[in-house]
Amino acid sequence: MQIKHMLNEVVRERREIMKKLFSMILIAAMSLSLLTGCGGNEGDGGTTGTGTSNAGTSDAGTSNAGTSDGGSTSNAGTSNAGGSSEVWKIGGIGPTTGGASVYGIAVQNGIQIAVDEINAAGGINGVQIEYKFEDDEHNEEKGVNAYNALKDWGMNILIGNVTSAPCVAVAAETAKDNMYQLTPSASSPDCAKNANVFQVCFSDPNQGIGSAQYIGGNALASKIAVIYNSSDVYSSGIYERFKSEAANQSFEIVAETSFTDDSNSDFTVQLQQAKDAGAELVFLPIYAKEAALILTQADAMGYQPMFFGCDGLDGVLAIEGFNTDLAEGVVLLTPFVADAEDEKTQAFVSTYVERYGEIPNQFAADAYDAVYVIKAAIEQSGAAPADGVSGICDKLSVAMTQITIDGLTGSGMTWVETGEVSKDPRAMVIENGVYTNFQ
Image (cartoon, rainbow, N blue to C red; front, side, top):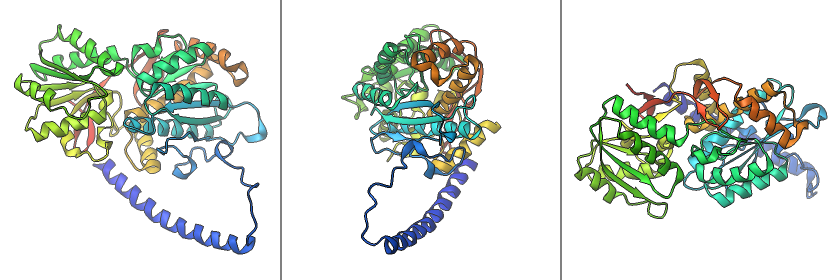
């Protein structure tokens, strides 16, 4: 409730600031028109993108992060002071438009906050960061196009992709280039099958196994139904490992139904099968957009089981047009909760709310951690931009197995050569419109 109050106050204050700012801009524009008359200024405006910085500030106007206009966004966070040619050029890729945009925008914003903090503190080993984010619309081909655009920009480190299918496609390209790639949230094992790719999030097998163990270990239900997306590598990957681990647990899977990306609007058949089978809990290893529809349709048919999901459900409260009251009691395994009382989380949430006007989800936190993981790996390895893309990748890949990170999404995080992260998940429940610790 304190976070909700904070959000309302920030929104009210920002409206007042924008009113005053608009008046000042209008006066300035009128004054300028009197001074310049009809003269043109077409050649004197070249101060876009990476040339300016308000590093470490909480003024949302210093960044284009959080926009959803479908184009690329240049969020420098650095002035490259002193004219040095050395700079870390970190690119990001994820969906800022389309059905998965809630995840991509969160990642874009989380990276920006971390970049600004690090630049304000002097950069990484004294080298500043430039940052640019490209939209992939949760599409493989557009993900590769975004990667190529960032290469043309001069990227030497990639944070991305946000979702699994585009990440697998882009990982094939980064392997060819030996480009270091760290995905904050793409959880398919196929994303990290190459030696240059690492994950901040849990892998799909770990999420499926962990969910089954948590449900069984805490005796949440004896009869379980599963609704998953058979055309999505993230969803089907979690489902397969959940089903396998369920054989070792005390509950029974009484209904297993699926859908595809081409049939993801009407879930009444799947819900009716779950209801008829007497399922007390419905496991949803899917993304938030479809989950919001399932919760809405279950309510309409009077079916009220417990709903349990993984990190893909994080963001359901931000789905446009969704009645968030229907998410009350939904449980999910996620490494981050916005109302945690530790100082690091509170500072991040406060900055995020102030900049972007909403409470951050786990994807934003994973992305924020990703930047600090890169910082630690650079410091451990002694890598420098002068090493070039391949040299940087070789050094960071070795350093990843040597560092330990205390972040927003886990304490004592470590990595193995296969790219997987080791950290403990936490179960969260939605109560009064916010995520809180469950049991």
